[in-house]
Length: 218
Image (cartoon, rainbow, N blue to C red; front, side, top):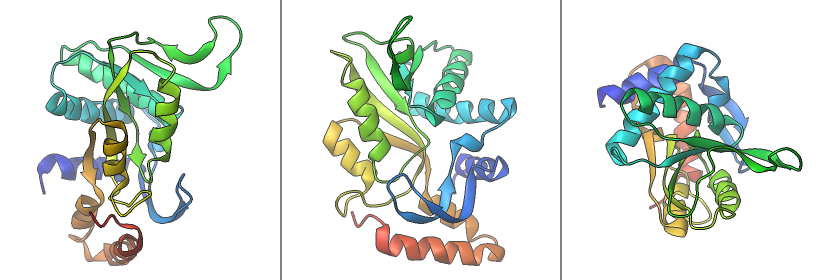
């Protein structure tokens, strides 16, 4: 396993972002592990998370200026921390996020921050994609921005789960909307990491059993 993947998984566990147990995903699926960016609680943790996203951005997008979009609520802190980390690398990118309910006074509207205009590219930063539900909600919100194109999406973990078909949710999103979805690690990286310690046997078995039913076939 590449060193940065190990470092990232250790970071997720240490920050309490990666948990094992019984959870319900936004898709409604019962899942044996959970990735929750909402458990990032300190300045050092969010700084580190932003650095991982910035590294992924620079590797995949390069020094091209886009606009970061962080879907409410967990994506907000990811967008802010990622933009700060990118600025430290010499790439100053604007960011914005959505309100859950449109504001009907003051500046109004659904978006907060830099609102992109026609011809600008947006990069969505999310925590995870399970069935693609959250990304489709984001695309519905962004559809109101005429002439704005989504260039890519970045997530912490590719869960390698099937979406509406036997294909992975990430592959379906890529096909449906025409942009790439990148992840820092995937669930098989997590399994490989866990298998190094026999104490994790139960969690490994539960994840593998879950993937046997819900894992993407292609």
